[in-house]
Image (cartoon, rainbow, N blue to C red; front, side, top):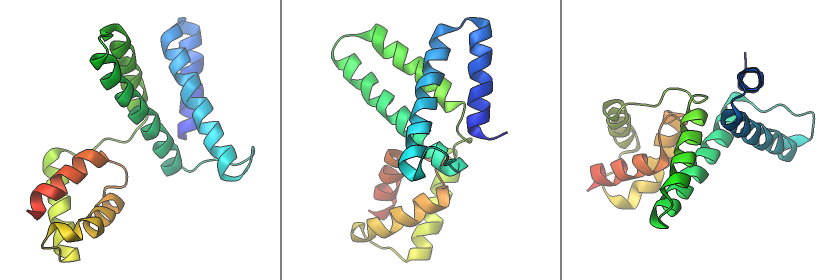
Length: 150
């Protein structure tokens, strides 16, 4: 079952359970996936799993930014709503790398690239993101690369 089929199935289950919050979240992500497919090649285009994961990560990033804004604006109830949506969306992503696995991956990439300073951070980031294949947060990866290159 691909990601879109899984979302459709979960959408129906949320309807049956009368879970309006989950239903709304799944409708938003399904809409974002369809929009991305249309952008990519038309209404009949199917997104690859990796493209679908990219769209879902983008949705999560938007909500994380909203959480920060709501918390700074003194709206904890809206921040909690966004956090709950993030939890629902994360269920559709592959398991992320642990901190130890991520550090091993970055050290391996640094050795492969032969990087010795922050000036080569771009090359390391590009290779590390390709190896992580979306299983690592970009900010976390960037911070780790910076730390290891100093």
